[in-house]
Image: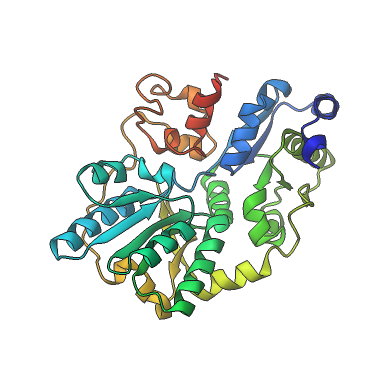
Length: 367
């Protein structure tokens, strides 16, 4: 089924059409907010195929990259405090979060100090560890946008139904559309938005519609193959050319207008929307998800909530914040590929596999 979305001849035809439709524009800037979209764009060399006046910018599409340093540090302090009080905690999190740097170190550093920190592929793995270790408290440090929040809510539902008492989370879940709105209000300029397919599977096309209605920004929900991305770019150019502001669904093979209603119900059951900090982006209104009061026993901060000072988001000179805002690309950062590499990362954008800097470095992108 996917072969046609990877077909070179189809891609070439779309590229020729993009060049034709883009004539006469001084500049067209399109933003995506998805690490997987950036991987497709960079891996397939899509930027090099586009006319010079068509720019693809990467927005805040990496949930690990925008997780506040204070939350990472607080989780480390919770581990230390619990150990001092005789509580044995197993901390689980994802592989890229494991190495995210903060001024106080990383979860990998915590592991090196002898604490029980384990990398998992999903929250289900953390749940299984809790089942296998009933004498220990398992805490899942749980980042992610809507795509990851849905399985987290499903797993919490299972925990409640089973009465599993030794499983908690530290929620750092975030919502994607409010971040886009914050960028628009903050002055980031783009002519159209490529919406992430994974997130849209959960929230549906309707989850993005208010951005077009409120700000007049054309949008296309797109899949993750090269032809998907090229089609999205072409559709956006055509809308801009006609002066239309619509939201189109290119990813019809997966995404529905209403999204995954069952997942939405589970998320709403366990989480409530709050203002939240995004690393290098500041406080974004109504962009975070916290467990509702009736489920606070599932949140580790109900039991341990150590004080953590305000810490700098990034090291001096790191352009991760500008990259997350769609204002710069990795090669513009003075650290990129020199003092900042995946082996020795300075900023979070170089750590996560969804981080733009990591993706550019992996594929040797210098444009």
